[in-house]
Image (cartoon, rainbow, N blue to C red; front, side, top):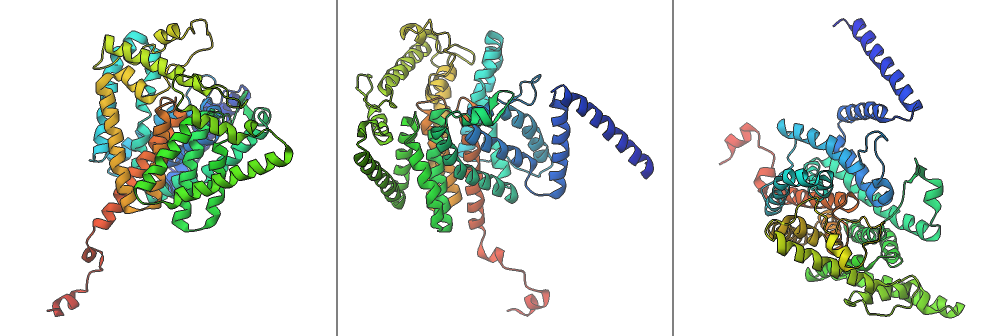
Length: 495
């Protein structure tokens, strides 16, 4: 094509696009504008050959779901198209990564136990989705989200093979976890701050689900600790300590506290005891300071955040919900135990009575019998579909076979964790610790059924698996293969 004709054509198309974008923005229809900007940004990122565009999308989602959490999760590309952030990333990044794989530019699936177990679990869920969709419609697709969010695992594995992309994701996690304690402190001190000053279409940019905030603060502690171990810069201990201390101030910290302890036990089992010592010193100093201040101000110690954390920890063992709690911030955590146990019991009985092998399917109302037995039939605001446990969600919807495959994924995580500690790489340890904190938290809460926890979990797990594989592949290269080849005359002269 004649260069002048090409210039005129490009200018005409650009002018037409600008006019359409202008009318759309004026009418608050932003979808076309966002698509145009997205295409231009994608082309620019491909041209500069930095981090993959898919990695940028994942970094955006990870930062948003950790820092913005429930607020970020409610945003959609357009008021006309309710496409939420996680689904938008999958819709764009999965086909793009598939194209890279077709041209041999990326690898998202690997031959190891974790990949095999996860693929089998996804296959089982996908195989039954058509039947469930026919029976339950949109609700089946909504519940199936806990399966398709695993796509972030394979995207992360593919991005982890690209040095600039994994550097971007690693930096995103670092910045995110440094910022998170500050965000949590603002929410504690000025609860309405983000609702007043940072909203879009009435939706706050930052709005945390308290149990997920606690889980991310615990995960942030481990990630920031590994930054300290990697660099030996003591400044990293400041945000790590802040994360640990802010964890104790959250309203629903029990699951995160259990996860924190269990992941710390993993470090101790690997004979890495310094992290436990650091936790003891940080918590001990904070408790001492609170007691000292309470004594000086004549404040009732039982109404402090420290005592609330103590009661939350104590309530873990109050399975019948009969304990007495005096701190005003504690609420009645023992009652939450009875709530969960009753729901888990009703789900188990439903599954065993109807379909113990393959479960009740996606779209089935796992709360129906529970609402009757817990006398909540009149609670119109009760919309939760998950029985507050990923294990029970999997068993309820996919039966014993699905649960066995889900536990096989956990076994694969265990084997990966063992290798991470054997290699001792700080990045791999940081990734896998994030995954374990969220996995343990998901056992007693709604974490992995939705994007607010699932996106970060699957991304961290995929990064850990591929990053460790890359390290072990580098170590497996013989030393002789790393030496430069000798010139031909030197080879001929050698005996």
